[in-house]
Length: 196
Image 1 (spheres, one colour):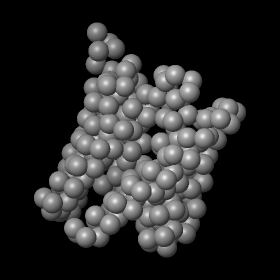
Image 2 (cartoon, helix red, strand yellow):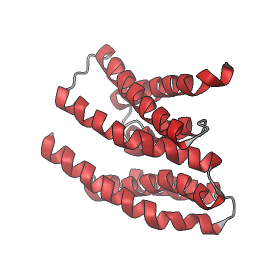
Image 3 (cartoon, helix red, strand yellow):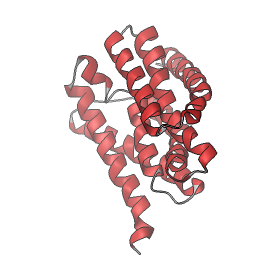
Image 4 (cartoon, helix red, strand yellow):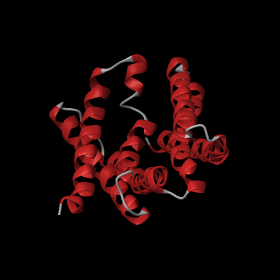
């Protein structure tokens, strides 16, 4: 009975905490600290963490999208309490991003924790790659926020190196995840600039 509810409760709690803190942090923090709640990478950390608890990739994917959905609900609920509005089109846009990112990063978390030896590195490389890509593209290239960009790249590389546990061959996945992350960042920032 205990295990049956662990994953849904983790998705609910993690989503609410990350979403609520994200909204509060965006309203209250400035400078480099503001990058933490206003980052795709830190938002995708939530489904990754919940995915680590899943027994299968399918459950990790479902838990990942559920976590992101609850994140959005928590985010917009806290924004409403702070009297910060939004548009329906922005909610739809971020919901679409959650439908894509949630399952991918839920599965990445599950791979890191329980995947076959050859795939374990892919799980962390997905998270590390999105930090490196966001640091390089969004913060350095697009926004010229050099400290935030350097910090994000450092976080991504540290995640990759520390989680490889000395197995250098696991770092090869960065050759896949960083370019994919950069492609995702380009698409995301282009869509945001065109639509909003």
